[in-house]
Length: 403
Image (cartoon, rainbow, N blue to C red; front, side, top):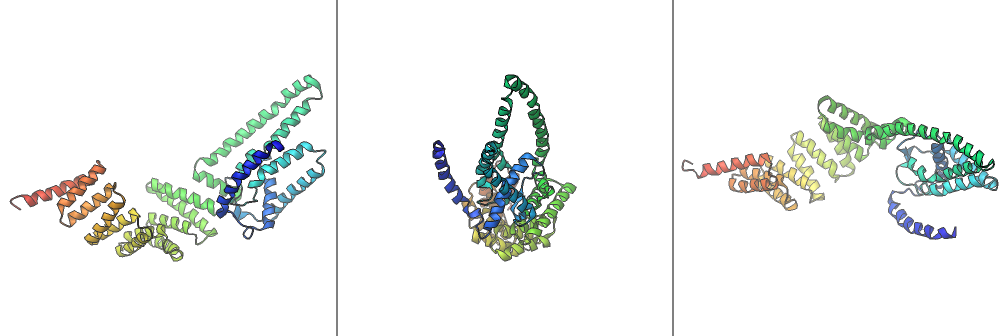
């Protein structure tokens, strides 16, 4: 033990900043009471041992929100691990090996058992990988001692016969691993596994909905519509857990926007802005809704609010400039595009748009300069090439004697 003290000390040095860094994400005693925390700790002692012994009903997420410390499903396992620990202490002289394995396991698993609860999970399968090593040491030690009494012949026989069991177990667990790996193909299979394993929660539905909404952007026609419907269904389920959560409303609003349900999209983004008037994601997307509704003044208002909050937001300034051009507020649009170029001097699109503005303003020479700059930054920009040709033709006509 003494020789390991330096390692414990070194671990403590790194543990303290780790705890401090996690402080904002950890639940305090007032939020997660002492009794509930103790139940969770002893529940997890049972949980990881059981899942290692009988790896069924595994899930990528065991949501903390579904953990009820007063339910029989929590109390019975917790009480079982507590009584087992007490029994081992009483019988420690007779059960030295098992006592060593069990309390070594507890020592390893304790930091992630809920003593410092953080995150959305009450348990996580991965925590059992290292913590159950003491049990494997105990098994190996048991086999080694089992082979000794009969001499080398018995040991030889036992070695050959007991080799069959590890082979069978390896094949069995390999098969289970193959089945298990299917759950990790993509976010759809992953979160579907969580839902079907009895751990349905806001996080599972929300993340699967995100997957379907991204997938919809990559599809066309019927496949695109189907993905949007799946995303919408999952966001609806997620909202049953947190009816007014901004992240869910934002992404459901994006789905409505993508499917053309503009009024519903506006309602979702407005609901977010009622609680947080400067939510840039909601403002940006509601501005897109207003653009599609042909209400440029409302879109301008939302984009202006974004710029007030985030003056260096190039995208908001670019969109605002284009709306101003459409309304023929050319000088105000020019000021905005000048600011965009100042913030993003390598933006070929900004030069393209400002060149287009100069064409509308009847200043083809300035337009030519900007289109050439756009082509310098992006040589293959077709629109810049076409607009440059148009501007040069206008200049030639103005210089011709007939003009």
